[in-house]
Length: 352
Image (cartoon, rainbow, N blue to C red; front, side, top):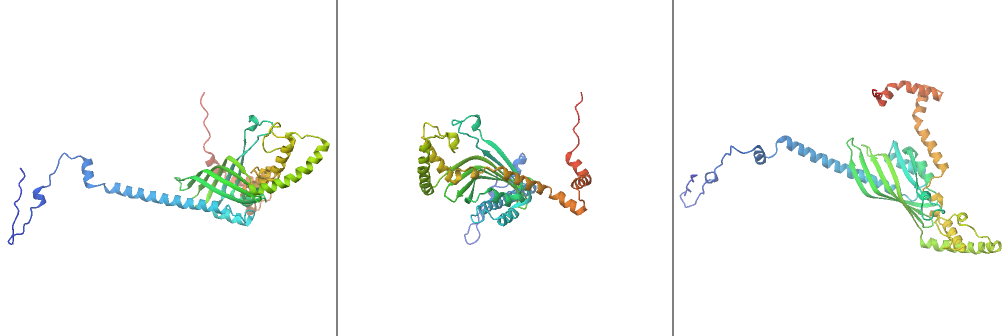
């Protein structure tokens, strides 16, 4: 039985209760486990320090990812400038502010190979993938050469965004629904949707921008379609009069329709009308479907080659070497040890 001290009554009648230690004294439990003692005493100093450090790192990563995301959204907004789509100086400033000089831009686009001979699909209707890769220093030439004069604006809508901080301090941004909307002067639209992957370095500049095409869609504004229909109707009336005298029906392959239409569905006059409307609408022409022509692709490859050789040209100028081959041999001999270290040890042959 635990003894309890009797309450003390001082002169005046005020009662002073007994001490809580006397009512319920502290009892040492010799069989208490280490986990119970740690729970009563709190976490050790080292663990508390690790928890604080982990919380600081988490907050820092969250702030870094939010700031990088804001930079990415700001770039998407500046890329859709209506009045400066064909201004090389504007795009030069954008590339310097948001990209690294040695960065890479990669595009994987689909070229629709669907022909009128295979209206229901087939081996020829499988889209072909076209891959383009260039340095970020070519952004001014690339944008001004790719976007045709008929384009009025380009809007970028990055959706389904995921941000991740990598171990080396870089930031990885992925948009699973990256939409590019091209608006033409006649009101028609061309939309391309794909996946964008962007890598920011520690200075928050884009080191890698990769875009993969998934699907495309086209739309025609009704107001522009009305005016286009009136023009095509006049042309059709004139051409139909000439066609009746010759009485010569054109085949579907000669019409080069943008859609696979069967001859029994539409008559020759209807097919001719649709072809003329499609020729008038800018987004139905082959030049404005993000399909780079061969001349522009060759020009980009030439720019890319000169950008890569800029280091060799600077080395030749600094050392006074006139021959390109001699400059290349000298450069390789001076950096032979670096090339050996980067290539690694040779692979060992398996014993027989």
